[in-house]
Image (cartoon, rainbow, N blue to C red):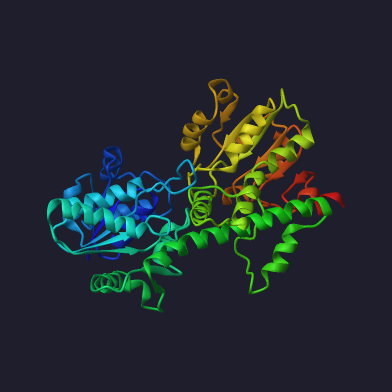
Length: 455
């Protein structure tokens, strides 16, 4: 099938590359010439395991191309995926300017039937706005070309997006019941047929329900994280091991084990903005989503927990003290620093007068860019970007772990102990067992795991 992908960001690039991998003829459009040049020269603009190889393989096979030519992109694909960004607006709602601009461009150049697919995460009712934008362009041109709008939200985890796309647990497709909508459903069924050979993974519904499903899924996952973080903070106060609690409640099949890990708070491009956008949608209908407001509040406070533990241990003023930080990206296997807890921690330590050495396996360049925006020049001068995890430790009062990279799970504890001024570890992701750390001679501070350090 001939497919056009509008937007070569995280969702668009993964979608385009994976659809090409299945044998489709994919045209990826972006208005950013630098990004297109990078892709055409063999690079990729994001870090995602396995993606570079898929892109290279399909470019070489002629199934994947990248361009800024809008007219050519509209002509190419019978199915047009809109996969542009929907950043949060000032009021927390999703900014749809890029989605609607993409729709207008399709309407400006289309001459025959098109299936326009909203792949971007968009609020309920966006399909109607896309439909209006398309129709206005066609009317302005005096063109009577058929089209229909479909919602096909993505469910990709950063760091596992290629695997998630190629082995989906569900495919959600929203379409209407008009003749054009049924024609679109047939095309989408054909497109996704390779994923349904073993068993049917597609959930068919109306457009608005599909749009809502994406927000509901992310809101539920964010809720589980904040719930466990709040319990972990209580566990610290009452002498409970939150890991034992997690295993105990996770064994209940009605609850399950996923997204029950206590930590330093969630970040990234999806959960924070999607929770806010869903709250904003509710307010438009004069409804207050009390649970989601609490989820957001708990998460904001959770990002401060590591810093507060450290200040409690070393004092409110940290002038002359130095700390090592492992992990900067908001989660492993990505370089995404958006809403990352590490940014909050670094700000706390610098405000208290400390200096820091930081390391992340892949996010160092992005960290330099983001921290240059977060900090003044004088503050940035107190941040050292280390060349390795061990390079952060020299002269540090303590080690603070913020991101659960696999490379951090089995370090040389003897080397860590020898390099630190004090054998103190603040583990924001509960990577280590408190009793093991005690046996190794460390003072260990996890999230909700104080029971074992007190005994």
